[in-house]
Image (cartoon, rainbow, N blue to C red; front, side, top):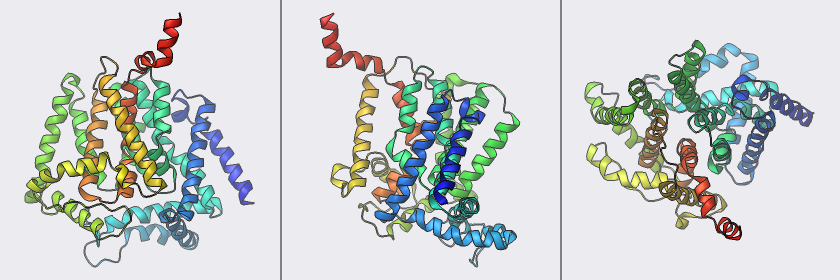
Length: 424
Protein backbone atom coordinates (compact mmCIF):
# COMPACT_ATOMS: atom_id res chain seq x y z
CA UNK A 1 0.00 0.00 0.00
CA UNK A 2 2.79 2.44 0.92
CA UNK A 3 4.59 1.67 -2.36
CA UNK A 4 1.45 2.56 -4.30
CA UNK A 5 1.02 5.74 -2.25
CA UNK A 6 4.67 6.67 -2.90
CA UNK A 7 4.21 6.12 -6.65
CA UNK A 8 0.97 8.13 -6.69
CA UNK A 9 2.51 11.13 -4.93
CA UNK A 10 5.64 10.92 -7.06
CA UNK A 11 3.52 11.02 -10.22
CA UNK A 12 1.36 13.85 -8.85
CA UNK A 13 4.27 16.14 -7.93
CA UNK A 14 6.20 15.30 -11.10
CA UNK A 15 3.12 16.44 -13.00
CA UNK A 16 2.76 19.58 -10.86
CA UNK A 17 6.32 20.76 -11.56
CA UNK A 18 5.37 20.89 -15.24
CA UNK A 19 2.26 22.98 -14.51
CA UNK A 20 3.25 25.54 -11.88
CA UNK A 21 4.26 28.82 -13.56
CA UNK A 22 7.21 29.50 -11.27
CA UNK A 23 8.82 26.30 -12.56
CA UNK A 24 7.69 26.42 -16.18
CA UNK A 25 8.75 30.06 -16.64
CA UNK A 26 12.32 29.01 -15.88
CA UNK A 27 12.59 27.99 -19.53
CA UNK A 28 13.36 24.38 -18.63
CA UNK A 29 11.45 21.78 -20.63
CA UNK A 30 8.92 19.55 -18.84
CA UNK A 31 11.35 16.63 -19.21
CA UNK A 32 14.15 18.61 -17.53
CA UNK A 33 11.86 19.82 -14.73
CA UNK A 34 10.81 16.25 -14.00
CA UNK A 35 14.44 15.12 -14.18
CA UNK A 36 15.71 17.64 -11.61
CA UNK A 37 12.73 16.88 -9.35
CA UNK A 38 13.39 13.13 -9.53
CA UNK A 39 17.08 13.79 -8.92
CA UNK A 40 16.21 15.55 -5.66
CA UNK A 41 13.93 12.66 -4.67
CA UNK A 42 16.66 10.10 -5.36
CA UNK A 43 19.24 12.08 -3.39
CA UNK A 44 16.73 12.57 -0.55
CA UNK A 45 16.05 8.84 -0.36
CA UNK A 46 19.79 8.15 -0.38
CA UNK A 47 20.18 10.69 2.43
CA UNK A 48 17.71 8.73 4.55
CA UNK A 49 19.38 5.42 3.75
CA UNK A 50 22.82 6.80 4.63
CA UNK A 51 21.35 8.11 7.86
CA UNK A 52 20.48 4.56 8.88
CA UNK A 53 23.63 2.76 7.81
CA UNK A 54 26.23 5.41 8.62
CA UNK A 55 24.79 6.78 11.87
CA UNK A 56 23.84 10.21 10.53
CA UNK A 57 20.68 10.05 12.57
CA UNK A 58 19.41 13.65 12.75
CA UNK A 59 17.00 13.13 9.87
CA UNK A 60 15.48 10.03 11.50
CA UNK A 61 15.32 11.74 14.89
CA UNK A 62 13.21 14.46 13.27
CA UNK A 63 11.00 11.78 11.73
CA UNK A 64 10.39 9.87 14.97
CA UNK A 65 9.65 13.07 16.88
CA UNK A 66 7.21 14.08 14.15
CA UNK A 67 5.28 10.83 14.71
CA UNK A 68 4.54 11.98 18.26
CA UNK A 69 3.56 15.43 17.01
CA UNK A 70 1.20 13.86 14.48
CA UNK A 71 -0.71 12.31 17.37
CA UNK A 72 -0.98 15.72 19.04
CA UNK A 73 -2.08 17.33 15.76
CA UNK A 74 -4.92 14.85 15.32
CA UNK A 75 -6.03 14.85 18.96
CA UNK A 76 -5.60 18.54 19.85
CA UNK A 77 -4.73 20.78 16.87
CA UNK A 78 -4.98 23.97 18.95
CA UNK A 79 -2.34 22.74 21.38
CA UNK A 80 -0.28 21.48 18.42
CA UNK A 81 0.06 25.10 17.26
CA UNK A 82 0.19 26.70 20.71
CA UNK A 83 3.00 24.42 21.92
CA UNK A 84 5.31 25.95 19.32
CA UNK A 85 5.20 29.21 21.29
CA UNK A 86 5.86 27.65 24.70
CA UNK A 87 9.13 26.71 26.37
CA UNK A 88 10.18 25.27 29.70
CA UNK A 89 12.63 28.04 30.49
CA UNK A 90 12.06 30.27 33.50
CA UNK A 91 13.63 33.33 31.86
CA UNK A 92 11.91 35.39 29.20
CA UNK A 93 11.64 32.90 26.35
CA UNK A 94 11.57 35.43 23.53
CA UNK A 95 14.35 37.80 24.64
CA UNK A 96 17.45 35.70 23.91
CA UNK A 97 17.38 35.96 20.13
CA UNK A 98 20.99 34.91 19.47
CA UNK A 99 21.55 32.73 22.54
CA UNK A 100 22.61 29.10 22.12
CA UNK A 101 21.23 27.83 25.43
CA UNK A 102 18.04 28.21 27.46
CA UNK A 103 16.50 30.04 24.53
CA UNK A 104 13.16 29.57 22.81
CA UNK A 105 14.76 30.92 19.64
CA UNK A 106 17.50 28.29 19.72
CA UNK A 107 14.91 25.50 19.95
CA UNK A 108 12.51 27.01 17.43
CA UNK A 109 14.14 25.59 14.30
CA UNK A 110 13.84 21.97 15.38
CA UNK A 111 10.37 22.40 16.87
CA UNK A 112 8.98 24.08 13.76
CA UNK A 113 10.58 21.55 11.41
CA UNK A 114 9.19 18.61 13.39
CA UNK A 115 5.69 20.09 13.31
CA UNK A 116 5.95 20.57 9.55
CA UNK A 117 6.89 16.89 9.19
CA UNK A 118 3.93 15.99 11.41
CA UNK A 119 1.64 17.66 8.86
CA UNK A 120 3.37 15.64 6.12
CA UNK A 121 2.70 12.48 8.12
CA UNK A 122 -1.05 13.03 7.98
CA UNK A 123 -0.94 12.69 4.19
CA UNK A 124 1.95 10.22 3.85
CA UNK A 125 0.75 7.55 6.27
CA UNK A 126 3.81 8.53 8.36
CA UNK A 127 6.19 7.14 5.74
CA UNK A 128 9.64 8.75 5.72
CA UNK A 129 10.25 8.19 2.02
CA UNK A 130 6.89 9.63 0.97
CA UNK A 131 7.79 12.68 3.05
CA UNK A 132 10.95 12.91 0.93
CA UNK A 133 8.73 13.39 -2.13
CA UNK A 134 6.81 16.21 -0.39
CA UNK A 135 10.04 17.84 0.77
CA UNK A 136 11.71 17.58 -2.64
CA UNK A 137 8.76 19.35 -4.22
CA UNK A 138 8.78 22.19 -1.67
CA UNK A 139 12.53 22.74 -1.76
CA UNK A 140 12.78 22.60 -5.56
CA UNK A 141 11.78 26.29 -5.49
CA UNK A 142 15.27 27.15 -4.17
CA UNK A 143 17.47 25.89 -7.02
CA UNK A 144 14.88 26.92 -9.62
CA UNK A 145 14.86 30.48 -8.21
CA UNK A 146 18.66 30.56 -8.37
CA UNK A 147 18.61 29.16 -11.91
CA UNK A 148 16.17 31.85 -13.06
CA UNK A 149 18.25 34.66 -11.55
CA UNK A 150 21.53 33.38 -12.97
CA UNK A 151 20.15 32.73 -16.46
CA UNK A 152 18.85 36.30 -16.46
CA UNK A 153 22.37 37.52 -15.64
CA UNK A 154 24.11 35.06 -17.99
CA UNK A 155 21.54 34.32 -20.73
CA UNK A 156 24.03 32.47 -22.96
CA UNK A 157 25.18 30.08 -20.20
CA UNK A 158 21.98 28.18 -19.43
CA UNK A 159 23.47 24.69 -19.65
CA UNK A 160 26.45 25.63 -17.48
CA UNK A 161 24.12 27.16 -14.89
CA UNK A 162 21.81 24.14 -14.93
CA UNK A 163 24.66 21.67 -14.40
CA UNK A 164 26.45 23.71 -11.74
CA UNK A 165 23.20 24.25 -9.84
CA UNK A 166 21.89 20.70 -9.78
CA UNK A 167 25.16 18.74 -9.85
CA UNK A 168 27.00 20.49 -7.02
CA UNK A 169 27.44 17.42 -4.76
CA UNK A 170 27.38 18.82 -1.21
CA UNK A 171 24.61 21.27 -2.06
CA UNK A 172 22.35 18.60 -3.56
CA UNK A 173 23.04 16.16 -0.73
CA UNK A 174 22.40 18.48 2.19
CA UNK A 175 19.43 20.34 0.68
CA UNK A 176 17.60 17.28 -0.68
CA UNK A 177 17.47 15.19 2.48
CA UNK A 178 14.89 15.72 5.20
CA UNK A 179 16.71 18.35 7.20
CA UNK A 180 16.33 22.10 7.57
CA UNK A 181 18.89 23.11 4.96
CA UNK A 182 16.69 22.65 1.89
CA UNK A 183 14.01 25.01 3.20
CA UNK A 184 16.57 27.56 4.40
CA UNK A 185 18.19 27.68 0.98
CA UNK A 186 14.78 27.96 -0.68
CA UNK A 187 13.94 30.93 1.54
CA UNK A 188 17.21 32.74 0.76
CA UNK A 189 17.03 31.98 -2.98
CA UNK A 190 13.43 33.19 -3.28
CA UNK A 191 14.33 36.44 -1.49
CA UNK A 192 17.17 37.04 -3.97
CA UNK A 193 14.88 36.09 -6.87
CA UNK A 194 12.15 38.55 -5.79
CA UNK A 195 14.57 41.43 -5.21
CA UNK A 196 16.44 40.78 -8.46
CA UNK A 197 13.36 40.85 -10.68
CA UNK A 198 11.56 43.47 -8.57
CA UNK A 199 14.48 45.89 -8.93
CA UNK A 200 14.91 45.03 -12.60
CA UNK A 201 11.22 45.73 -13.30
CA UNK A 202 11.33 48.81 -11.03
CA UNK A 203 8.29 47.57 -9.10
CA UNK A 204 7.42 45.05 -6.42
CA UNK A 205 4.10 43.30 -6.90
CA UNK A 206 2.00 42.19 -3.95
CA UNK A 207 2.94 38.59 -4.77
CA UNK A 208 6.67 39.42 -4.59
CA UNK A 209 6.27 41.26 -1.28
CA UNK A 210 4.36 38.31 0.20
CA UNK A 211 7.02 35.91 -1.10
CA UNK A 212 9.79 38.01 0.48
CA UNK A 213 7.91 38.13 3.80
CA UNK A 214 7.20 34.39 3.88
CA UNK A 215 10.78 33.56 2.88
CA UNK A 216 12.25 35.83 5.56
CA UNK A 217 9.95 34.23 8.11
CA UNK A 218 11.07 30.78 6.98
CA UNK A 219 14.75 31.69 7.42
CA UNK A 220 13.94 33.28 10.80
CA UNK A 221 12.17 30.13 11.99
CA UNK A 222 14.81 27.67 10.81
CA UNK A 223 18.11 29.54 11.28
CA UNK A 224 17.42 32.88 12.90
CA UNK A 225 21.04 34.10 13.02
CA UNK A 226 21.13 34.20 9.21
CA UNK A 227 18.63 37.07 9.20
CA UNK A 228 21.08 39.63 10.69
CA UNK A 229 23.62 38.46 8.09
CA UNK A 230 21.11 38.84 5.25
CA UNK A 231 19.86 42.31 6.22
CA UNK A 232 23.07 44.25 5.31
CA UNK A 233 23.08 42.65 1.86
CA UNK A 234 19.47 43.69 1.28
CA UNK A 235 20.12 47.24 2.54
CA UNK A 236 23.14 47.61 0.24
CA UNK A 237 21.10 46.20 -2.65
CA UNK A 238 18.33 48.76 -2.12
CA UNK A 239 20.82 51.64 -1.85
CA UNK A 240 22.57 50.52 -5.03
CA UNK A 241 19.25 50.30 -6.88
CA UNK A 242 19.41 53.77 -8.45
CA UNK A 243 23.19 54.07 -8.78
CA UNK A 244 24.32 50.75 -10.14
CA UNK A 245 27.59 52.18 -11.44
CA UNK A 246 28.66 52.72 -7.82
CA UNK A 247 27.48 49.35 -6.54
CA UNK A 248 30.86 48.17 -5.26
CA UNK A 249 31.39 51.42 -3.34
CA UNK A 250 27.85 51.22 -1.92
CA UNK A 251 28.27 47.64 -0.73
CA UNK A 252 31.68 48.42 0.74
CA UNK A 253 30.32 51.42 2.65
CA UNK A 254 27.28 49.53 3.98
CA UNK A 255 29.39 46.60 5.17
CA UNK A 256 31.93 48.92 6.79
CA UNK A 257 29.13 50.59 8.78
CA UNK A 258 27.69 47.17 9.66
CA UNK A 259 31.11 46.02 10.87
CA UNK A 260 31.26 49.03 13.19
CA UNK A 261 27.74 48.27 14.44
CA UNK A 262 28.67 44.62 14.94
CA UNK A 263 31.18 45.62 17.61
CA UNK A 264 29.40 48.69 19.02
CA UNK A 265 25.68 47.77 19.06
CA UNK A 266 26.02 46.28 22.56
CA UNK A 267 26.76 49.76 23.93
CA UNK A 268 23.46 51.00 22.52
CA UNK A 269 21.34 47.93 23.24
CA UNK A 270 23.09 45.40 25.53
CA UNK A 271 21.17 42.37 24.25
CA UNK A 272 22.64 42.96 20.77
CA UNK A 273 26.10 41.74 21.73
CA UNK A 274 26.96 40.16 18.39
CA UNK A 275 30.62 39.33 19.18
CA UNK A 276 29.63 37.55 22.39
CA UNK A 277 26.93 35.59 20.58
CA UNK A 278 29.57 34.18 18.20
CA UNK A 279 31.89 33.42 21.12
CA UNK A 280 29.04 31.58 22.86
CA UNK A 281 28.25 29.67 19.68
CA UNK A 282 31.88 28.61 19.33
CA UNK A 283 31.97 27.50 22.96
CA UNK A 284 28.81 25.46 22.42
CA UNK A 285 30.47 23.65 19.51
CA UNK A 286 33.72 23.18 21.45
CA UNK A 287 31.78 21.41 24.20
CA UNK A 288 30.60 18.76 21.73
CA UNK A 289 32.43 15.60 20.71
CA UNK A 290 32.90 14.49 17.12
CA UNK A 291 35.22 12.54 14.83
CA UNK A 292 35.86 15.47 12.48
CA UNK A 293 36.90 18.07 15.07
CA UNK A 294 40.01 20.16 14.37
CA UNK A 295 42.04 22.39 16.66
CA UNK A 296 41.07 26.06 16.57
CA UNK A 297 41.99 29.19 18.49
CA UNK A 298 39.42 30.30 21.04
CA UNK A 299 37.55 33.44 20.08
CA UNK A 300 37.19 36.42 22.41
CA UNK A 301 34.46 39.07 22.26
CA UNK A 302 36.80 41.83 21.08
CA UNK A 303 37.60 43.37 17.72
CA UNK A 304 41.25 42.38 18.09
CA UNK A 305 40.39 38.72 18.58
CA UNK A 306 38.06 38.70 15.58
CA UNK A 307 40.68 40.26 13.30
CA UNK A 308 43.38 37.92 14.63
CA UNK A 309 41.21 34.84 14.00
CA UNK A 310 39.91 36.01 10.60
CA UNK A 311 42.49 34.06 8.51
CA UNK A 312 41.78 30.87 10.46
CA UNK A 313 38.03 31.36 10.06
CA UNK A 314 38.35 32.01 6.33
CA UNK A 315 40.55 29.00 5.61
CA UNK A 316 38.48 26.71 7.83
CA UNK A 317 35.20 27.55 6.12
CA UNK A 318 36.40 27.78 2.52
CA UNK A 319 39.09 25.18 1.79
CA UNK A 320 38.74 22.44 4.41
CA UNK A 321 38.82 19.49 4.40
CA UNK A 322 42.45 19.12 3.44
CA UNK A 323 43.63 15.72 2.15
CA UNK A 324 45.03 15.14 5.66
CA UNK A 325 41.50 15.58 7.07
CA UNK A 326 40.13 12.60 5.11
CA UNK A 327 38.96 9.81 7.42
CA UNK A 328 36.11 8.15 5.53
CA UNK A 329 34.29 8.16 2.21
CA UNK A 330 32.26 11.24 3.14
CA UNK A 331 35.26 13.40 4.03
CA UNK A 332 36.99 12.08 0.89
CA UNK A 333 34.05 13.26 -1.22
CA UNK A 334 34.06 16.67 0.48
CA UNK A 335 37.83 17.01 -0.03
CA UNK A 336 37.59 16.10 -3.71
CA UNK A 337 34.75 18.59 -4.19
CA UNK A 338 36.60 21.49 -2.60
CA UNK A 339 39.83 20.64 -4.47
CA UNK A 340 37.92 20.67 -7.76
CA UNK A 341 36.31 24.00 -6.88
CA UNK A 342 39.72 25.50 -6.06
CA UNK A 343 40.98 24.32 -9.45
CA UNK A 344 37.95 25.86 -11.16
CA UNK A 345 38.52 29.09 -9.26
CA UNK A 346 42.01 29.37 -10.78
CA UNK A 347 40.52 28.62 -14.20
CA UNK A 348 38.05 31.44 -13.55
CA UNK A 349 40.87 33.84 -12.64
CA UNK A 350 42.79 33.25 -15.86
CA UNK A 351 40.20 32.15 -18.45
CA UNK A 352 37.01 34.07 -17.86
CA UNK A 353 34.63 35.88 -20.15
CA UNK A 354 35.54 39.49 -20.97
CA UNK A 355 33.34 42.25 -19.62
CA UNK A 356 31.58 40.25 -16.91
CA UNK A 357 29.60 42.91 -15.06
CA UNK A 358 29.68 42.80 -11.27
CA UNK A 359 25.98 43.59 -10.86
CA UNK A 360 24.30 44.33 -7.50
CA UNK A 361 22.78 40.83 -7.58
CA UNK A 362 26.23 39.24 -7.87
CA UNK A 363 27.51 41.53 -5.11
CA UNK A 364 24.69 40.34 -2.84
CA UNK A 365 25.67 36.73 -3.54
CA UNK A 366 29.33 37.53 -2.87
CA UNK A 367 28.96 39.64 0.29
CA UNK A 368 26.24 37.51 1.86
CA UNK A 369 28.03 34.23 1.13
CA UNK A 370 31.36 35.34 2.55
CA UNK A 371 29.64 36.77 5.63
CA UNK A 372 28.05 33.37 6.25
CA UNK A 373 31.34 31.58 5.60
CA UNK A 374 33.16 33.80 8.11
CA UNK A 375 30.48 33.18 10.75
CA UNK A 376 30.91 29.44 10.15
CA UNK A 377 34.69 29.67 10.40
CA UNK A 378 34.53 31.65 13.63
CA UNK A 379 32.18 29.24 15.38
CA UNK A 380 32.38 25.69 13.98
CA UNK A 381 35.36 23.33 14.29
CA UNK A 382 33.80 20.11 12.98
CA UNK A 383 34.69 19.49 9.33
CA UNK A 384 31.45 17.58 8.71
CA UNK A 385 29.33 20.43 10.07
CA UNK A 386 31.34 22.99 8.09
CA UNK A 387 30.70 21.10 4.84
CA UNK A 388 26.99 21.00 5.59
CA UNK A 389 26.62 24.65 6.59
CA UNK A 390 28.84 25.79 3.71
CA UNK A 391 26.66 23.97 1.18
CA UNK A 392 23.92 26.58 1.73
CA UNK A 393 25.96 29.37 0.16
CA UNK A 394 28.21 27.46 -2.25
CA UNK A 395 25.75 27.80 -5.17
CA UNK A 396 25.71 31.60 -4.80
CA UNK A 397 29.47 31.57 -5.43
CA UNK A 398 29.99 28.55 -7.67
CA UNK A 399 27.20 29.11 -10.20
CA UNK A 400 28.22 32.68 -11.19
CA UNK A 401 31.86 31.60 -11.21
CA UNK A 402 31.10 28.72 -13.59
CA UNK A 403 28.96 30.99 -15.77
CA UNK A 404 31.82 33.52 -15.99
CA UNK A 405 34.40 31.00 -17.24
CA UNK A 406 35.14 31.16 -20.97
CA UNK A 407 34.41 27.52 -21.81
CA UNK A 408 34.83 28.08 -25.55
CA UNK A 409 38.36 29.30 -24.94
CA UNK A 410 39.08 26.23 -22.81
CA UNK A 411 37.73 24.01 -25.57
CA UNK A 412 40.10 25.68 -28.02
CA UNK A 413 43.02 24.93 -25.70
CA UNK A 414 42.24 21.22 -25.37
CA UNK A 415 44.72 18.86 -27.08
CA UNK A 416 42.04 17.13 -29.19
CA UNK A 417 40.85 20.46 -30.57
CA UNK A 418 44.42 21.49 -31.42
CA UNK A 419 44.94 18.16 -33.19
CA UNK A 420 41.73 18.54 -35.18
CA UNK A 421 42.66 22.09 -36.24
CA UNK A 422 46.06 20.87 -37.44
CA UNK A 423 44.37 18.17 -39.53
CA UNK A 424 42.11 20.65 -41.31
